[in-house]
Structure formats: structure tokens, C-alpha cells
Image 1: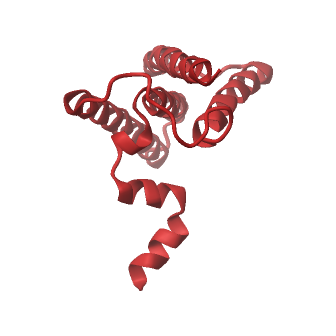
Image 2: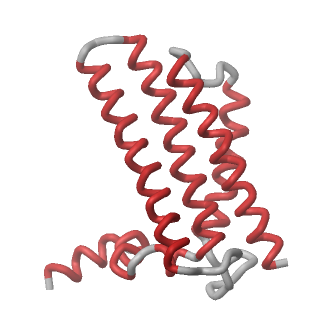
Length: 161
């Protein structure tokens, strides 16, 4: 059962990333690439939230210690880190695009940018879901980053002492 949960979450991350890339490409061409029907948006968000909960709550069904789906090697981890960094840069650029469009009072660019931000956020979160289950966060990120993400208040308080 543990491996099944891992594989389903990994496959979902890959599929969600692919769909987010298509959405991002569509949002870069169409001014309003956001679903018109609220039911569609809520359904997509609910499914994505379920997989995010499975990913971040590491004790549901899988437990704290599990083997990654893929064999962990330093070159592969390097490519995975570069991939998530690239998607993060795309997300930051999308947010900057929206700020610039708002500053210029351009409604068309603002709507297009909002779709880009949502699509790039989907790309970023689905990339993390896939890489989380493929390699384990302990293999992808250093201890300091993991401690900060897990408990930022304690991490910042620890730095002052």
C-alpha cells in the first residue's frame, strides 16, 4: 500500500506538471486563461489540495521513513534541483509580470499575468510533489532549508540565540 500511495502521488505530480505547462502556454497567449465556471476551479483545487496534504503530511499511509521511487544519485539530484529552481524562477517572473502590468494600469496584461501566476504556481507545486515522492526531501534539500520550511519561527528564533 505504501508504494502504491507513493507511485500515485508521483504520477499525479507529473500529470499536474504537464497540464500546468499547457495552462501556462495558453495563459501566455490568451488574456483570460482562468476557468469561467467556479465548480471547475474548485474541483481542480480540491484534488490538488488532497495531493498536497498527502505530500506534506508524511505520516499518512507512508510513515516518516520510506524509500524513494527513483534511485538517488548526485547527478540526478543535481538535475532535479535545477528543475525546481527553474520552475521557481518562472513563478517569480510571473509575479513580477503582474506587478509591472498593475503598475502600468494595463488590465489585459494583468489578467494574462494572473493566469500565468496561477499556472506557474501549479507548475511549482506539482514539480515539488513529483520530486518529493521520487527522491525524498532529505535527499533534495539541505538540513537548514528543511528545518526552516518545517518550523520557520523556531528556525529564526534559533538564529538569534
